Length: 339
Image (cartoon, rainbow, N blue to C red):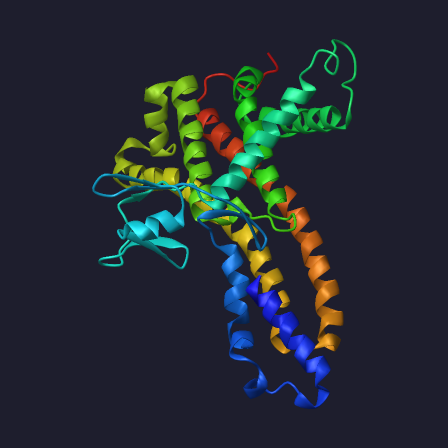
């Protein structure tokens, strides 16, 4: 908000005095353009309060586990307590400047994830009425039809082809649908004016990948058994190569969730960085001619990010389904069947 206010104040002063030019030494200290990019890119980070764009909606509780449990109503009460302070959106100890043992604070990105979950539950609650889902009749309403198309496509084109048989696919379909919808809604919320993309934070993508890790290996243990799962660590090689193959296969178990984490994080962050960089150039150069090129290109990038939001949701879900099928299918005793 300060960035835009400084920019507007500076622009007004320049228009009122055309002879002043745009030399740096004539710009007020508060409107120094050297910090434009810091202001712009700070929006990518997390915040201790619930913010929509430049507007502060409400305070969020700060919960810290560090030599005891510390709960504060907001950042102001935390700072007044004197034990902790916030530096660059990170909570640190006042004494030594180090981070606490465990920070469980409800942040802006957490709030947007809650909004996504509430929205998904609201949609499913709304379309689950008997009138909208009557037997042998098409669902009524836009959301009911849209959700039906998403569920059927994921089940028929992603889950069933990736898993050994239909029974296993049916038991895991709910997880893949929930994962796809959660990532999609979170991505789309970040594209709304003033929104924040939770999937552009490593802890969020890591949490999704950790859940995927347990689903992949848990499904293998459940449907193939511990013996078959352990034999899979040989990778089909003879037993005398176990000393080589077992470490490689164990490493691959963790490489998969790691790649899922970085892929989703990088793709959702990269677009925001490029878009914010171009917007930063607009304020940095303060040039209307340059704006005629930056604004249309920024709109194009925004539409591209909209496409990426859908693609990355699909890619994450599809890869987890493939990894799960590989974990089960390589030593599952039944071939694919519709029964």
